Image (cartoon, rainbow, N blue to C red; front, side, top):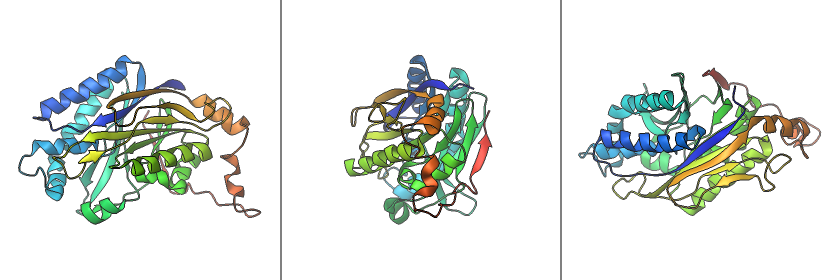
Length: 303
C-alpha cells in the first residue's frame, strides 16, 4: 500500500466538444498531464460528465432531455476512465453524472476507477435545492468507504461535504482521505463547499481534496456558469501546514492543482496531535457520549 503520494485535483472547464472522440482526447490529455506530474490519484469534479450532453444536438439546452440522453454514453464514459486508469497506473475519480435507476429516478453518481480494473460507486446523498426543484435528481445511498492501494478513501459529493455526520461516518469507517468533487455557480457556493471541506478535515483529522468545475458553458442549463478553485486540505495540526491548506488553486483558472498527502501523518495526528478532535467526538454534548454514526457504511475493497 502506498501511504505517501501526489494528488491531482482538477479545476475542470466544461466545453462543447464536437464528438465522443474529442471528449476522449481531452480526457486522455488531462489524465496524461496528471500522470506526467507524478500523481497517483486524479480527482475530477461533480457533474463534469454533463459535458457529454453536447453530443446530442436535439437535447442541447433542454435540461431534462439532456440528462436522459446522457444515459447512452455512460458505459463508454466509464470504459474510457477504466482504460486510462490501467494505462497510467493511477486511481481516477471520474466526473460525476446523473444516472437513471431501476425506479426511474436519476441519482448523481461518482465512480472511482483503479489501475487493477475495479470501480467503486458513491452516490450523492443530500440534494441541493436546484437538484431537487429543477433537475428532479433523487438522493442516493449507501455511504461507502473504499479500501484501495492508496489507503481508505471516501467520496462526499459537493453539498454532502457540508454535513458533518455524513463525512464523520466515513471517517469512523476508516477513511483517511475524503474526495469532494463539486459544482457551484457562485463564489458563495464554492466558499460553502470549501469551508465544509476544511471543517471536515479539521474535525476528522484527515485529508480532504476538493475539485470544482470552472468557467462558462452557456449552451447547457445544467452548468451555465461554474466558479471555484481546487484545494487539498488537512487539519491545522502537527505535521500539516499551519493553516491546514496543503495546496490551493487560483479561482476560475482551468488546470490541475497538485498536493502531497501522507496518510501516516493522519495516523500520527489522530494518535498524537496537539488536539484529539477525531477521538474526542463523543464528548461534544458534555457528559453523555455521542453515539457513533458509522453503522450502515459499506466498506468496499478495490484492491
